[in-house]
Length: 496
Ligand code: NAD
Image (tube, rainbow, N blue to C red; front, side):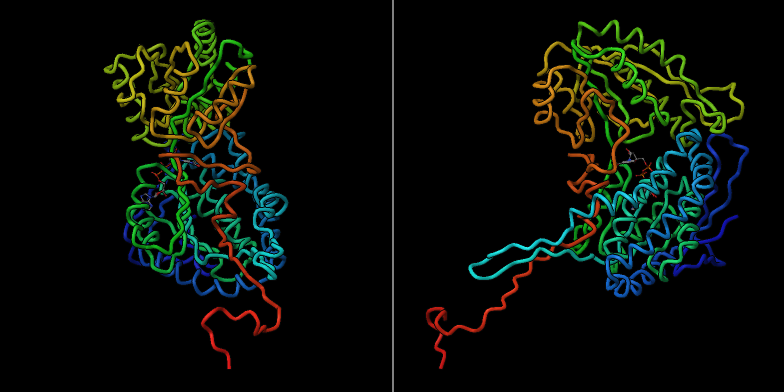
């Protein structure tokens, strides 16, 4: 089953591994997906292959590269069921949800060509200087390293890979060590699509492999999706690699505000989905719910009843949510409930390890904590837990919501439920987030819009629709076709 690293359009392996990843399905611990050895020296081989492939790929016309990517789209369509199953097996997320991820791979190619392309459209600027026209043209950057997270192991790397390739960059992709199988299936799609050798490469590996890739001299950009802690390390480690562009898509501690005039049933449903979808393992999940005191009791009561009934189980049975990704994730989830207790939060629903499941896996139940007093120093209130937990706050004024929404250091998504447009318009400015949803939950974004956070959530290089911008360099061109004119010499130039 294991095929190796994908370099120069071939799966390659080696005798002497630097380590290996044991890939086990988190939804069924007796399902051993495979063992994926990794080889540090393959990092450099892959970067070299991408470097060699770059000039020719970059020189192809936009339409020639599009031809290749449309072929890849056909493969994504043919392989959609296999990809969805690989995602479900590797992450434990329900099959219905994994299928939406497999579909997103396909639509990313369409959206890049039908929508994002406008952002890199050549522009003529007449009279950019007196008598001279200017042009804004875009060119690729070179070799892009794409580093993926476990929670959307195909869709999120693909969100960097497609625009990078469309622009004429070449790519080395390292999947998360928690989802190597999806990384392999994704590379198999490229094997079938037959892009030119070295244009797309994939290497398996751990954090150290990721670090080696980031630090490779020949890499021109690092397109990362993962935690703030790792994003920060990448930023620190590449400080002197001045030529590298970094697109860091990092964590969140997202808030939903439900105002007194909110459409309540809708707000409850949307917030429930936002909090617990993917077992809370989305950067865009809701972790904090701010309720206007007039509707708080009604909201909490209904939200609690509904959260209790959410189905949890094996991916093939299409439950609402699957397991957490690992034992370490369970440990973290449970630890944060203790921290919340120590920090005076009232536990309204206690999250537990779920034992009586069809298969043994990393299943937990949802949890809810009521925050007695807002405290920006609280570890519980400011940390990303990445599990099915929400903190509920009661609020009275809009100013309170601004203070709480902005208190964690993260700034990815916020949602606001109200009929009052002026409140929404104020929030647009006051909430420090890169995505603000009005009467819609925090998660479930559009690839036709930018996706990126402020503060600890991102470095101002939003992905999704805008990814094509960081995959390209805008070049300012002054094109002067006027003949030499001696009458316009600058003072002090003697032209004999
Ligand atoms: P992670 O940060 O633990 O790992 C992400 C990737 O970084 C993995 O491939 C890992 O091997 C690699 N890595 C680890 N150390 C490295 C280093 N020193 N140098 C280079 N690479 C290194 O993240 P995860 O647990 O896989 O994913 C969950 C996190 O991702 C959460 O924080 C979540 O909020 C975030 N996330 C953000 C977005 C977004 O778009 N903003 C989307 C999805 C997930």
